[in-house]
Each structure stands twice: as C-alpha cells, then as structure tokens.
Length: 340
Ligand code: SAM
Ligand code: DTB
Ligand code: SF4
Image (cartoon, rainbow, N blue to C red):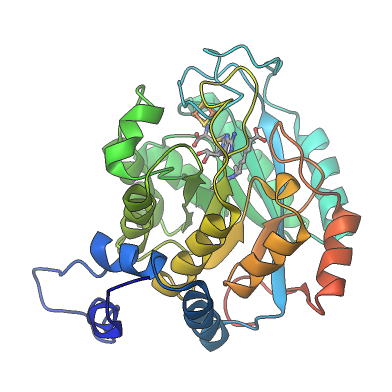
C-alpha cells in the first residue's frame, strides 16, 4: 500500500490564489504517482468528492465524433489506424462535403448529443482545408451544437480562422508522458503539441487535450501524462482519456491490455487534478464492459463519445449508452460544460 501520507498530497494541491512569479509547478509527478498508488476506495472517495464539488455526479455529457477526413495520414503515431505507414485496411478519403457533415450532425443532435467533434487525419491542415473546415464549423454551430475539431497541428492564422468561425473546442492530445512519447511517435515532437495548444488558447478557443493509456507506458509515465495536462496554465477544459484500441496492422496491435482498474485510477487522478474539466471516458469503451464504465463515472468521468463509431473503430450503440445510464440512475447533461 501507499507509504505517501495525506500531507504529502495536500502539499501539492493547486493553490486557491495564484502564486507569485516564478510560477510554481502545481502538480509534481511524485504527487500524482502518489495519488495513483492510493488504496482504490480512498482514491475513488477523493475523486468523487472533487467531482461533487464541481458537477452534478449523475450527469454525463454526450459528444458525437465524425471522421470528416479519414486515413492516409503522414504521421507515424504507433496507435493509429489512420497512419499511411501501417497496413490497417482503413481506406483514405477526401474531406467530406458540408451537406454530408450536416446530415450526420443533425442525426447526432436528434439522438441527444450536445457536442459534435470533427476529426481529420492530417498532420496539419492546409490553408484551403481550414476554409472548408470553418464552413463545417459554422454549419454545425448553426444547428445549435457545441463544436469541436481535431485537425492536427495549427498555425496562428489557422487557429484564428477557426475561432472566427465560432469553434468552441479544439482537441489536440498530448497522448502520453514526454519521456515515453518518442517510443510512440517520431514524426513530430512534444513541444509542437504544446505549441498548438497555446495557439488555440491564445485565440480564445477552449482546449480539449488528453491522452491514451495502455500503450506500454509504465506507472510513472501515466502519472507524467496527467502532470503535463494538469500543469497546463490553465488546465484543459476537456480531458479525453482514451484506453488504447488495439488495431491490427499498427505497431501496438499486440500490446498487453491495461488492468481495467488502472484505467479507472487514471480517470480518478485526472478528476482530482483537473477539478472543473470535463473528463471524457473516450476510446476503448466497447472493450471495457458496463461495470468498469460505471466505476469510471464514479471516479469522475462526466462525458462520453456517443455514437456507434469513434473515427474508424467501434463504440457502444447509443441505445446501450442510454440504457446503461438509466440502469445507474444517471442521465445526460443537457447543458454545456460547467456546473450542471
Ligand atoms: N490527426 C489529428 C491529431 O493527431 O491530432 C486528429 C485525429 S487523431 C486520430 C485524435 C486522437 O485520437 C489521437 O491524438 C489519439 O489520442 C486518439 N487515438 C487515435 N487512435 C487511437 C487508438 N487506436 N486508441 C485510442 N486512441 C486513439
Ligand atoms: C480523442 O481523444 N479520442 C477520439 C477523439 N479525441 C478524436 C478519437 C479516438 C480514436 C480511436 C481510434 C479510431 O476510431 O480510429
Ligand atoms: Fe495522423 Fe492523427 Fe492518426 Fe497521428 S493520430 S497518424 S496525426 S490521424
């Protein structure tokens, strides 16, 4: 069991008032690793306490994903079925037309989604891509949905164009800890990811950033990912926690699955360290089972990807999700992020 005292952890809690410059690191990797090592009931109790202070613990946000440009990506992310470097059977396609995207967005809204996230398998968008995506953002927003996009790295002017189109969130994941990153991706570095997040923040678009666990990272590296996210200033508004979906043809296809309780712990630690963020129980739900998902909600997850497909892989049916929440006496959060 943990030898770390409560005092050690309390010492590293975010301060109520901003510290004077130079800015202190709010969460050390040691403090986060100590949270991970807490006895499971203690960790869940703390996470649930923080969750209740900031959200209605019975409500979950529904965000629907659509791959608006699939496959053929030049990056080598070792987990990704859309990289052109791996033979995964994913067919590359062009950017979808506006009407096709709006059709999917209307369907998502009718099914109950409040956020619509458009994903493109790009290293970074080109100028003409941004013009088209801006049009998609305007169209989806006009339907009354919150908009999110994930398009790869952004330049200043691209971030500004998306902000001007009314984009609410930009998703760009740190994916893993800095010291494990090079084992997974070689075609762009960690700093480039941080730079994109800074550009998004600078134009007033909310940041959605999280990562993937179960890629062979060690315990401390999982803590390192959460530390990177929690120490962003401010920490992200939305934090997707993905459990690796092992896809045939990718370098991580045969990766040993993560202990499901370790996944629940990751959600709990994200909740404790980023109290007001939407913590999204993201990829990997289809392989997880209802009981582990219920534990994730108890640990502070309050958002899911809702719809039978993620980008290229499967996700639980919408009916199954509605039923699961009903069985738990829970429901969908109708309001955008914040206290519901
Ligand atoms: N190309 C853009 C980028 O990389 O930022 C946007 C799309 S990319 C597919 C979005 C995120 O999906 C990745 O950063 C990664 O965290 C997640 N992802 C991709 N493949 C995954 C998998 N097999 N299992 C879990 N998460 C995955
Ligand atoms: C995120 O963190 N997870 C989503 C979304 N952001 C774009 C993507 C998950 C992709 C899972 C593999 C696939 O379906 O291709
Ligand atoms: Fe390309 Fe994004 Fe997949 Fe990496 S995660 S290969 S950048 S689509």
